[in-house]
Length: 320
Ligand code: HEM
Ligand SMILES: [Ca+2]
Image 1 (cartoon, helix red, strand yellow):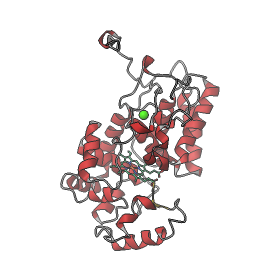
Image 2 (cartoon, protein in one colour):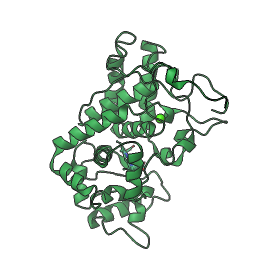
Image 3 (cartoon, helix red, strand yellow):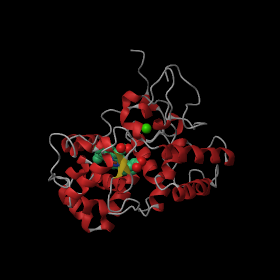
Image 4 (cartoon, protein in one colour):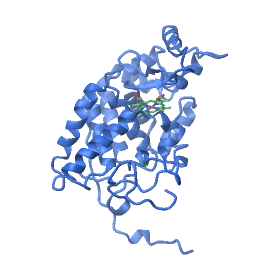
């Protein structure tokens, strides 16, 4: 065995801190804001795109910007795995633009994973969601493989058992899972292919409210010709971050089968009911769960690098 290393003797990695860039890039937060605020105002899909991108990054190898790496001839990267193919361009775009601005302000200092974490945090607040504590000092990961994705993220056709197992594997409670899902799906879209098996086909899902079913059927009738057609995940208050999605679910107005299932499964229904009644409670729990997500398996110190550009490693190790 020549691979044994003395891991225990290595110094512990430095923790994240809220003032990590105070000396090295004091205008970090202002720069993020100057890009993020106008982009969200002109392109309201940005917040949802960025939050989903961040979540999909953190669930695969931790919050290390691995999802941003572009594939090349030697490596199929995470973003080209099929779950990630529907990640909206606005999320990648915001990171690229903030990073470019920061490379002018303080070159080589701010990691792509910190940019994504900061942009997500600020965008949630901009669409009316809660504040949560955010710390910095993440390093960007050195690996991004499409094969690492499967099993770490839910799919809209999974059973509640499977979804809960995936969240448990990331050390989330069922309560945290419901809060995170509600926050994410309070804003944003889904493409027809994610829910049309509930509408068409031999066995339409009886839990879809007939009015919603009619609307979604009309929208998706032509989706084989135009696969970009998509529906709001929260059909009643899509643009705002609020607890409406939970009220919707209690009324059969969930667009994804997995979201709707949260209103009927005995493990999740009581939580859906609580959040539908109490937006303050939902915001509180969502904020705690986001704080937890934002530090999930982060790399610090020499466990990663500060990428020069967010879609490529600084060096290209063979096979990456
Ligand atoms: C419970 C398991 C989950 C499943 C099965 C699931 C599945 C999906 C699916 C199928 C879409 C539509 C993608 C598309 O068609 O483009 C979507 C969108 C989205 N999801 Fe989830 N999701 C889950 C949990 C979460 C969590 C925990 C978050 C974040 C905290 C999240 C954030 C989002 C956001 C923001 C969007 C909208 C993206 C956009 O509009 O660009 N999801 N999700
Ligand atoms: Ca990652």
